[in-house]
Amino acid sequence: MSLTLYERQAKDGWRPSPFCWRTRFTLAHKGLTPDVVAIGFTEAERIAFSGQGKVPVLVDGERVVWDSWSIAGYLEDTYPDQSSLFGGNGGRELARMLGHWVDATLQPALAGVLAPALYDILDAEDQVYYRRTREARWGMTFEEMRGKRDSYLAAISPAYEPLRLRLAEAPYICGEKPAYGDYLVFGVFQWARCTDPQDLIPAKDAELRAWRSRMLDLFGGLARSVPAFESAA
Ligand SMILES: N[C@@H](CCC(=O)N[C@@H](CS)C(=O)NCC(=O)O)C(=O)O
Image (cartoon, rainbow, N blue to C red; front, side, top):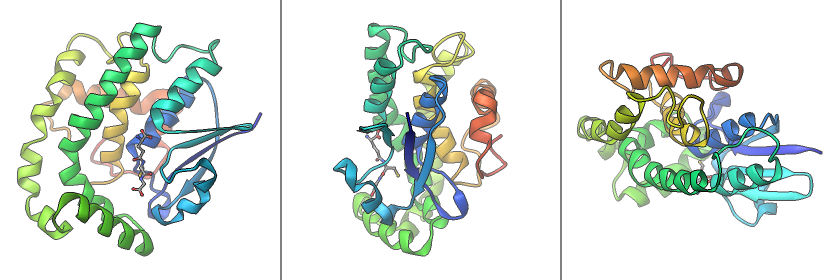
């Protein structure tokens, strides 16, 4: 059966989307290797068949699934013989909560830095679209956001606190082995690695860095196989 993943690409093959990284790791966890079709922001017509305009979109034979959470649930239910993403129903519910924390707290904590930085790695046509939509969302220009970079950077550290506490207890967020909760969080740090030259995990956060390094090694170095800034190893 053919399996195709549509994901975001920036210029020169850079792959910055945190949502798409969740899905890449989810597929790898299930031992699945999709054909990857990378599209720019201004190529939404290529996923119009899904009835919406965002990536990731997974096509599994006749089945079309979009939204990283829906894709994770679909893969867990459709490929139950492979290693579980959630470790049962309670784990699935907890993963949903963790996803909400990532979307509502962790990702926004880095977004003030990463939104204008992402602009720099887009093709010219995508830059026009991205600037228009993101500046409207933030209510200020990218230049104004860059001017506030130091204050955005200072606000990141408190958002890491739950990760610090967890990674002092276990090698992975999900325990002895990585699972969906790790992929949710890692997507954010892979977005950072693939977007901004500065490492957004400071040296003092050694355990968080060590976890990121383990995540980068997973699945044959899947996340190391794309262009990224070397500062965040
Ligand atoms: N809740 C969705 C969010 C997906 C999402 O926001 N994808 C971005 C990735 S760059 C996108 O395609 N945005 C389209 C746009 O801004 O036009 C998920 O978890 O998959």
